[in-house]
Length: 234
Image (cartoon, rainbow, N blue to C red; front, side):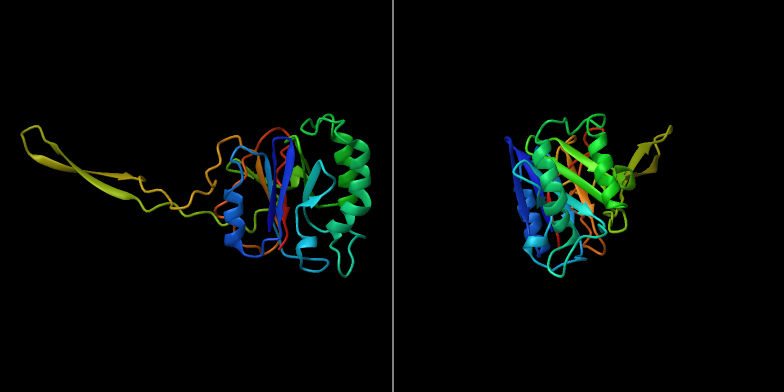
C-alpha cells in the first residue's frame, strides 16, 4: 500500500506499507489540502517488496500508480509497472518535462492516447509536483460519492447508523396528549470515510484485486481529468 501527494511544489511519496494501520496513520499525517493518489493492490508480477510498490517515481516531478497488467513487461523480480516506468515512461516524461497542462484533457489527449495504446485495459494516474494530475483510462473507473476508483469490487461501504427514535407529545385540542414518533439519524459513524478531507481535495484511489476495503480513506474528484496521489503496492 502507498500514497503520494504534492505539497509546496514537491512530491512526497510514502510507499511500502504492509500493515494497514501504519498506512492509515501516515496518510492522516499528510496535509488535508494536498492533491494525492492512493494505491492498494495484490502483487501480480515480480517480488513482493518496497521496490515494486506503488506509487512509482517517473522522475523528480512525476509519480504514478497503476491498476491492471501491462503485456510484455515484468520479470521474475520486477513488476510489469516497474519495468514500464523504467523502459517507457521515464524517458518519455524526461523529454516532456512540464510543457503541458496536465489537467487539461485537450492538451494531454495525445499523451493519454499513446499510453493507453500501450497499457490496454489498465488504468494509470499521474501526479505532478505542481499538483496537476492526469488519468489514463478514466472512463474505465467509477466516480462514487465524490471519489474516483479504478474499480469497485473491493469497496465496502460503511453501513448507515441505526435510527434514533424520539417520541414527542403534543397536546390535543381538548388538552389530551397524543404521542408522535420521529426517526432521526443523529448518530454518525465513528470513522469518517473521507478521513477529514475537505470537499474539493483531489484524492483518488487505485484498487487492485482482493485488497482490504478502504473504509477510512476517500478521494474527492477534482477537475475534468482527475489525477491523484501516489500509492504503494501490497
